[in-house]
Length: 628
Ligand code: 6PG
Image (cartoon, rainbow, N blue to C red):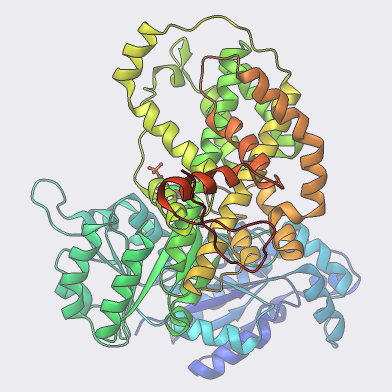
């Protein structure tokens, strides 16, 4: 057995000592409290309410490190130590081989910890010093992190689960590799499998282990049977392969090797109906199958993605402690990971996320087009304008990356100008539009954005037609602030439509998805994180529907003329602005009391005897007229 030193870190009052004692009793190994290593000068200083400096702490950290090294000669040990900064943590584990160190970080809300400190007695550290600890605290980059709003026992149970080796990752493309690295950084023991395809995918797992230091202790496999055999029961396997047939192919090979109780998580962008089918197939074999929506691209996978899980609660409880380690954190003390519902709910929510993402991206492309082509600003100037919008309520990850893209130079020009405008897509946007049609939800903006990509993809045809119908001059006169308000308005409509879609699916499938919870998971880690999403959490909690929120009402009433002006002026342009224009149409449609659809009903009845309801009969009775 490897001898380990468990460092439990956190500010004063976070519960390090209590947890340390519990673990030391459970594992029957010694416990040391770093407080006992302070020289008398340090204790006197803290007693007097004076924060310690780096210099004050240097000798103390050195002594603790020497003690840990000495203890490791005879066995494992648990040491509770605040270790507030990364440099302190590095000092604590100096000269100890990394595979012998485990970090357990306790984090929590200032008010909660302050309350606990005030309630405890007999400690030299006055509660007033707590703020000084929060001020210098640096988020750890390695190790297990637990929120102290959970009880000691809950944290203890999670540690027990998370210590069970071993977690398996199948598929080491960029997303799988980064998720594996993220898990490894949180001390999760890993087995990694990537298939062998001669000349294309050879020794992929082995190379990942060699390339990334954090994967050094992971076991690489190219043989699925040996990979499965390396996992402890109940096995936990994260599938990170391309959506569609590849998932079924891997499952066909995997199922005979697994046993009842094992858990398979599909972390790709799978279709939610496929997930439902795979869950049923797995269930017949007693195997749990979770559809896990993972958002945040490659950097999210590595540093903290948003995770939307669909499946059964028992299986989720067994993998939650792992997912909680690797997920992004929201603005409060929550995690951007949750079980959003049963069956394909997780993948449905992820698909809708991507639909919203499509429209957010298209809106930015349209705003850029107006600023650059209609108003004549250079990409750098557009970036400057958008940077101001960032400060002015429109902060979002997609806006941020757009600004960076606009500033990227190549040679004397902009890199953007040599990127082909043939837009591509991988399917989730079109699935979202299909699902919306099947559910009968008018999510026009993601569909407009999807079709805009299709139009862009018709590049040769566009080139031909643009020669037949060359642009004609009719200037667009629009102010930057009008455009900004129109953009803000359109984003609200896009988000509203996305949430409507999830609500409709939740009702249709009986998933009971919580809208505020989905918005909360989307506040960090994912591609559509933004200030608007943060506000949406509140609005959905209070009003259940974005358009019913009083603050949204005020915003819309303020911005409506701007969207109208924008659409009116853009109608002079020869460029297409489907999402800006579509937002106005969508809003007008939803807020129209008496629509022209009575004519549609009459036409349907005229040619097909499809019947209609009458406004003067509320009983639901259907009528037919002999129109001829
Ligand atoms: C995410 C992204 C991610 C991926 C999309 C791209 O949330 O991390 O949405 O899933 O970038 O699948 O989709 P398209 O290729 O269809 O644009």
